[in-house]
Image (cartoon, rainbow, N blue to C red; front, side, top):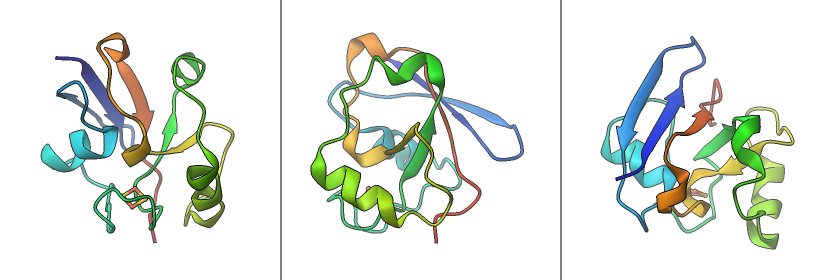
Length: 107
Ligand code: FES
């Protein structure tokens, strides 16, 4: 199973494994990763699964669709060019090692 690394705002790293076909948000929630609230459960309507994708992985992910892009305008923490919603990133085999930063707040 692909490994996903979450970096907390304090620099602590948490590495989890995730099933292909699940989302980065689900990988966080199922492994009790702090800072991913996911209030809407993954239906792209809350923006509390906001993450920053490390630069090396940005180009390897499909671009956000219109709905995700719109929701990213409402994140609590600053939106950056690497901002994504974890619930909208579906994990694939070639994402092994995907590294994302957790913002300092979701609300
Ligand atoms: Fe609500 Fe991702 S969990 S937008």
